[in-house]
Length: 164
Image (spheres, helix red, strand yellow):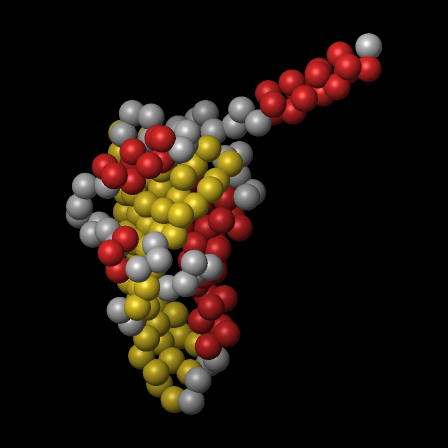
């Protein structure tokens, strides 16, 4: 009896994990340099995706050789998403340039391209571009603004998801 109860518990948990999965691939450049693994836009997207009905996992580019051109074929990444069992694939490419105004203050211009695919069928569900200008007094405000861009990006992309 005890064994049956444990098996039923695990089956119940497994059925609850049958949610759709999203593979997020992001590439961020700031002044021509690839950002570290814990990039701010990616961090903001993962925070916001946690609040959605999707189970998200990510892969962040570590060097310029892993970059993608927004116009290029994303087939290799789609295969990676499909192989990993994802239902959806979101590719994000962010390029930012900083203009220092005075000590610690400045402006940051960012261009973010995003592509949402059905990973199973390779159908493009939605794509777009966000242009953002951030004015900051301190560098810490810039990092926080990047996280907020990640949040906004998830809200924008959620409009493309089919009603699962």
